[in-house]
Image (cartoon, rainbow, N blue to C red; front, side, top):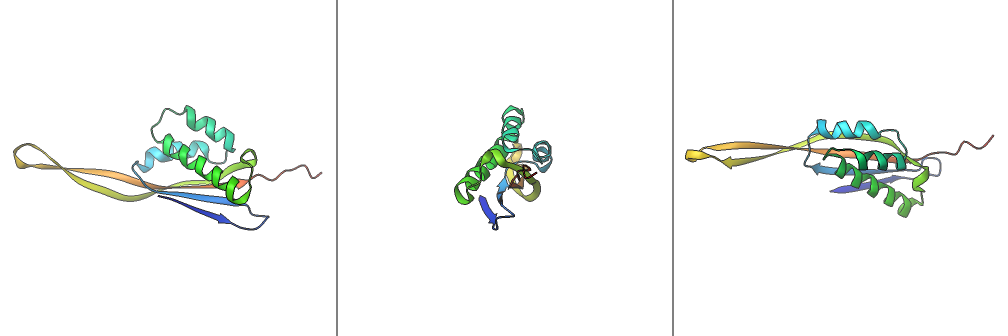
Length: 128
């Protein structure tokens, strides 16, 4: 599930995207999120496309979604935006039972996480 928020105002143009219940460990997602925090949109895409981790694909989809929503809803340019905030939170653990030999069962615990990414417009510093 992906949720979008946009905070208004001309001085504070940002868009927030939240992906909930992603089947991924928090530590594995955190390893990828730490690499993109504070970077520009294009640099983030290059980093995520070249990372060898499975956790980078849902985060890449989330960054694409945030940029598309920022462009469509608020008219932000992707080249001027950067990742101002990126965080991963732990979510519910999905528990299943796997049948084993002689009528026994083995518990399977699948961790899930919530990923939040905030895209902000970088201000031009050419006012001197």
